[in-house]
Length: 109
Image (cartoon, rainbow, N blue to C red; front, side, top):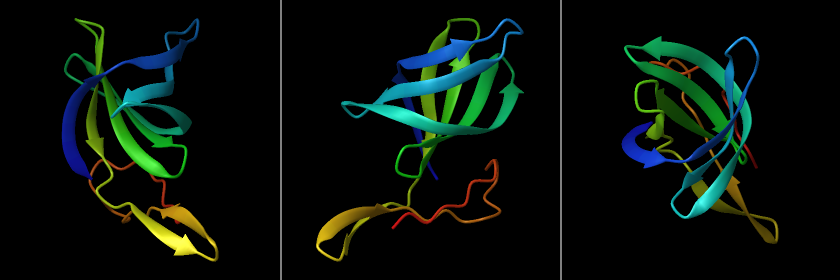
């Protein structure tokens, strides 16, 4: 994964116990739906979320609890567009054992 550190807007669900679940976020001019949330942790004043975006792309989102601002901390460095049959398909391969990764290993073809 590569370090991004870009501010973003995030649509998230907040439950009665204070659990936060990101649902979609803005990145590079698009709204990116979240398929699932993996690891959740806290570092200092930030709540951190490893999410899997639609299409198998991982992102690390962080919420600063003091300012209530979101940022994309890291994004997948591995992502290709490959021809499959008569259509183009996004293919993302994630390496197991990458520090801080919450356990998604995906090959989308």
